[in-house]
Image 1: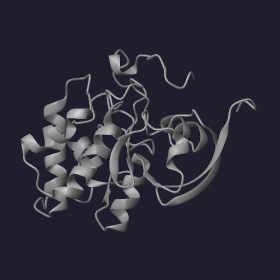
Image 2: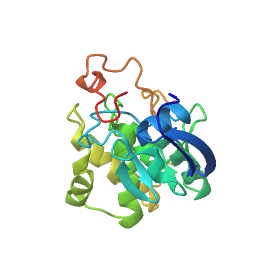
Image 3: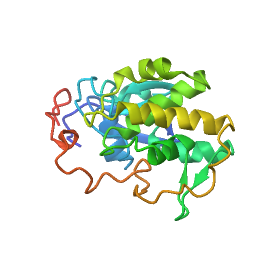
Image 4: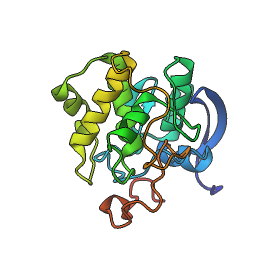
Length: 218
């Protein structure tokens, strides 16, 4: 941190844990989460608020963390994709993979229905989908597509993503009694980085390209 940059000390609760951190006033929330808190599940995409890869919940509302400064969240609550499994466990909805990893039904839905594609955009889709299901437990296809319209999947996997959300909604409603223990699919690598590993997957995918950071000058 440059001594010449103005800073602000923020107190923020992230995934249920309170942090008190000094941050540069111009540091974006996405960089604060990744660099200062080590929560790398939130991905930096376009940095102009278009792609939604950096979506987190800000006091329960999905927001693009490249559009917020860390100094703006003092006293607020942030939920990132790393917090989904804890939420599911607290609500009694957690699902366990064959290797013992705990996932939220949404994460399992993306895994089972091939909604994750290369995985780069997946955390943003998950957070937006979670917010949708909080408001609407049984969204139809059009409602899911409308809710996810601010998230871009460059693998063009929208059908699988919508099916993943529908699967999770059914699972949360208890309609799908065929799942809940082992996921029955070992194809998707599971990690703590948002539930899915993006390393080595679709190496040529345009989602993995380096975008100009802009905005914060980093």
